[in-house]
Each structure stands twice: as structure tokens, then as C-alpha cells.
Image (cartoon, rainbow, N blue to C red):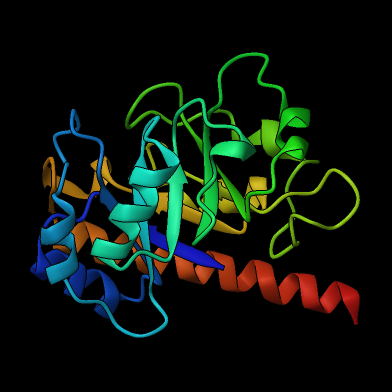
Length: 216
């Protein structure tokens, strides 16, 4: 299961996120984003062993993604543009992001070799209809398995007030929060972040235990 805090721009926020129990942190390398961070600066922000370092990219070239990954020490490329599998970096795991709007075609996800699909709201900080994911996601289900089941990470408008409900409805592999746990773009509110991570971990762990109970 993944609990990710995105938009990390400083060591203090990264350390707090990891201490709270997040197991993935995101660095935004899209130059137009208010949360943009230079690869060299991201490299200076250390994280604990086992915490995934995720780079956020928008229509960046494969070569540039791989270059930034080497500089910043990334584990995952989170791709938000029009990338196809031919554009995926060869040197790290890919999470393909998509905005869920009316009529979103989940079947299109089957054409990707990504480890997971990050489903975002129609605009930054806005959630989507989590019920639309039902039937397409299964917690901890490998994306490569036959059938219409994918590793899905929920994003968009999540915080401690709604993450448990989102997990109970959509049964995702993970969740991602950013703007709703900030005091300003790129600066985390540590209390909101801690509450989000705690609520997310509790809900995901309960979902995982329920799944194991059904299999036994």
C-alpha cells in the first residue's frame, strides 16, 4: 500500500512526512508548477530507506526524465502528460497519471505497462466520483494480472476528512495528498499532514486485513 505526500520542496516537510508514516514522497519537476523543485535541490532532501522517491513530470522527454532521476535519486516517474509506453523511462518504475472527468475510459489503462495509475480529480485539489473506480481497482492487485484490475492510487482533494471514505469506496492500492495539507504551495501544514497520513494508513490497513480475511 502507498501513502504519498506530494509537492515536497524542503527537508523539514520530507522528514515530517516520513516520520508520520508516509512511504512515498513526491517532487514536482514541472517548471510551471508553484511546487517546482530543481533536481539538484531534491537530491539534497534525504529520505529513509524504503520510502519511494517519486518525480512528477509533464510531457518531459524520456532522456530528461532519466537524467533527472539520476540526479535526484528517484525510484518512480509519475507521468502526467500525453506519454505512451514508448516514452516510459527504462531505468525506473512508472506511475501513469490521469484526470478523471465525466466519461473517463478505464479500459484505456489496460494498454499501459505502468506499475500503477494515479487517478486525479478534474482540477488541482478537486476530488472526483470515487464510486466510478469500483470494479476497476483492487487493493494490492498487481497491474499485470489478467482481468480489469489495476493498482490505483487516488489523488485529488484528499485530506484527513475524506481519505477513509475514499478508500472504503474505491479500494485503491494507495492515496496521494498535496494541496489540502499545505499552508501555501510547497509548504506543508504538519498537523494536517500527520492527520492525513494516520487516517490513510488506518483505512488502508483495515482494507488489507479485510481482503486477507476473505481469502482465508
